[in-house]
Length: 476
Ligand code: FAD
Image (cartoon, rainbow, N blue to C red; front, top):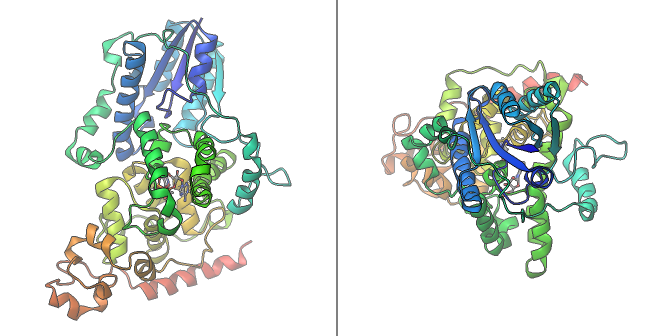
């Protein structure tokens, strides 16, 4: 009997129940990744994807002796169907994923399997618990994080660990054609100079992910709670992209915490685990409320008068708004494919509230430029900031970018790194250069030429936002 392990974005060998159950049940196992341009991800994430495919191919080859990740490019449904038919596959094993494009592909796979009478075995290994296992007292999904997390913590003893893949991989079928060992279109993308620059400081793959996790726990974790909001500090784990591509299974990190907690400051571990639980929360939200990838969770925002793409959108995307902390974040994103969480909130608030642009515009830009672009985290993050999501920041409250900048980048180090034309300004002036024309002149910065004047008046735009949301108060 032949089984297919369908990889969507679980680029690892260990802790992968889909692979383990296929190996346990079948005589021959095909491991395949289907790359359909119709279902492609954003450009930055696609560059990571190219290397994730390469690293899994390398790891499987090392353990099996020959390339055995089948990479099929083109129309998903027809490749999927022909593979099942040609190799008489009796069962498909896969890890369930939420959001676009995974959901559509999973639906298609289900239809093909039903037509061909092939078994389909989903695994919920990318979740901590299966959707529906952690519900509120009314038996409904949580829409507020804190009670969700409180409940989740009391359930952690019931969490089922994933296993290492100890079986040898002899049952894996080597790739049937040399054309199927790599994904040429993705590789072409990742050879672009911008992609090479973006990836210069990253190492992709399962073992790199574990090394990064362990070195985070040994080092930065101790000061995580104190430092995590300061973008100039390298204080967070930068593991989001490893989690998104499944190099690290989030559930296993909970078990790792328990194993190491005796030697470490438990409070620091719990503080990081709480952030990781936000990811879990986001996944469950998209499972229960799939419309929230495109529509506001709070229905009263459906007709809210956000504006569409215009010149200001491009100014924001390129980091030319004239608000240094916003520009620093947007340029960090453009060059590195990453942005610090605190700054993500600031730039998102600026776009949706000061510029009144639709949150979907920002989400789309993040989807295209973030290495860690994730349908669940991204939708939840944008809606949270825009005020229309679950657990949202009150819709009438804006992040004041100047206060955020002064509080979380007090010495302007983050701004100086990404907005070098302002580097010579004193700390007092760097957060709001337009308020300090003398200081700018003294260091040779001509506002409007060397660095833009603000694209919007922060106070006036704040008041306009408050007027706009006034109408929501009467809507239930
Ligand atoms: P750490 O601080 O080390 O946190 C550990 C892990 O916890 C992260 O890797 C992540 O998986 C999870 N996590 C932390 N904060 C959050 C959060 N607020 N929501 C959900 N999970 C969280 N994260 C993504 O992975 N992909 C996205 O596309 C994404 N888009 C976002 C958009 C907006 C507007 C906002 C405000 C946040 C977004 N986030 C997204 C969440 C968060 O900014 C990143 O997960 C975090 O900055 C990644 O850095 P880190 O790995 O160093 O995080």
